Amino acid sequence: MEQKTTVQHIIISDELPEKQQYLALHSTTGWNANGFFTPDQLYEGICNSWYSIAAYDDQQLIGFGRIVSDGVYQTFICDVMIQPSYQANGVGKKVMTALVQHCQQQGMKSVQLFCAPGKKPFYEKLGFIIRDTEAPGMTLFLDK
Image (tube, rainbow, N blue to C red; front, side, top):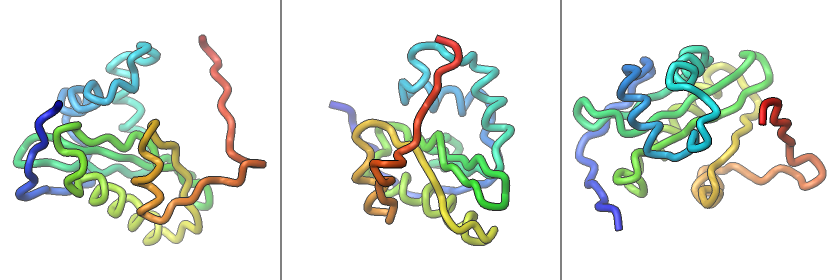
């Protein structure tokens, strides 16, 4: 069982994290386990975000989340990740709160997101609801 870390003082920043710290955090999630993207592509993706949030404990990146948006009506929260030893300590809630507040400040009317398996209850606690089963969204993988 992974050791949980007690959170003392978390710093939230809207500046992009340093590339190596981001890649180290990203590797803890297992999301790119199939190697769909190179490290450079992963970092370039976050650099092209509409808005992002990084969470630090001292100087260590422990959380991240970003928004892809046209700035008018389409808004999508993605890549929310918290270092496993910091999960269930309120870090994810701080990241999500900052992302949603930015959307509100920019006048967005709705926010979409994908969530990792098993994380649905976390997002429901923050007010997100499951899309209608008649319009749940779909995916097309272009390069298999």
